[in-house]
Length: 66
Image (tube, rainbow, N blue to C red; front, side, top):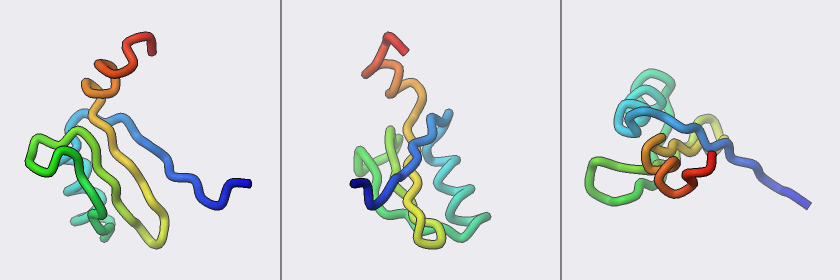
């Protein structure tokens, strides 16, 4: 049984997404990969909901059949 679901959004610019969700919407950055920019992935928390951002180019490189 699922207890939690976290949407993963494909984005063009993880840093830009982080700024938007944290500075504009008041979210909190929980984790990034890699640790140093440019980041390919980020996990954020917004009002108790986890949201993940994945750089579109990195996703396509990992799953080219999409």
